[in-house]
Image (tube, rainbow, N blue to C red; front, side, top):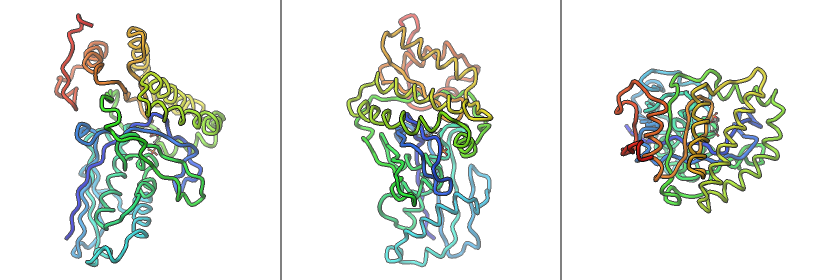
Amino acid sequence: MKIVTCIAPVNIAVIKYWGKRDDELILPINDSISSTLDAKSGANMCAKTTIMASPNFKDNKLWLNGKEENFDAVRLQNCLKEIKKRINPIGNKEDIINWNIHICSENNFPTAAGLASSAAGYACLVFALAKLYNIEGDISGLARRGSGSACRSIYGGWVKWCKGESLDGSDSLAVQLAPTSHWPDMRIIILVVNESRKKHSSTNAMKTSMSTSTLLATRAETIVPARINNMEIAIKTKDFAKFAELTMRDSNQFHAICLDTYPPCFYLNEVSHSIIEFVHAYNDFKKSTQVAYTYDAGPNACLYTLENNVSELISIINEVFPTSASREEYIKGIRVKTTELSQV
Ligand code: PMV
């Protein structure tokens, strides 16, 4: 028997991927940029996958969060098919290629709630399979076949998914723009507004946006290319104010496209809107941009800020958005000392 266990953190897009030019190969209509959470401090937002291969297994099996799921699911099969093409028989001494496998994958955060769970899940699965079969070279294109945004979780730090031009998707890959160490005081605060599964899967919603939103083509053709350039400069020069404005504007535009989709997709709720207002009010109070929000296909907020603001922000968030849950249950991740609000 051979066993491999891997963990992969989620990534949070600052320039969003929305819309496919090829549904089958999962090829996007625009480039996107994200940061991948640090696997150690971000251990609360990870997928963990164990794969066992054995000549004694009668069937292939898959468990997600403890529940057995269909192994024949199209995206899993697509990943496996592509992985099998990359296996070098010389690198695999035993007859492992012909053995059945058991896959167990768990997320330690809400699944399908618009918190990049599929990104972490597929990145982890593909990484574990690549280790199992000794596959070398870039594997972001393999992760992409599971879930588009998963290709960005293959790398740490700041990552760009280049949409690519070729019809076969061979150049639609993720590249690391900068490692985590490049901007060491960057922090992400995730505010879970609602942990239930999202109403519209991103796959279906993207398809409807592609066929009905007139704003989407303009976004992909003219707005995103300029934004990608500016975002790369903002990250390279660690210009937080520029980075934050681009991030918020791109999140807002993505949700505007969701509203321009017919019928519309509502991902944000009243609490999400209040968080947006809170962030703008905080930045106004500080007289400079200190925090940015971004939302994926769900109501949960991801806030980007720098380390020196975290304690104060968490204290104010506790005050403005009180909860009945205990502090331990409510706040997870890196330990943060709260600030006395009278000092703020
Ligand atoms: O990879 P998918 O199919 O889950 O799509 C993700 C799309 C967004 O999260 C909304 C944006 C992004 O770039 O991650």
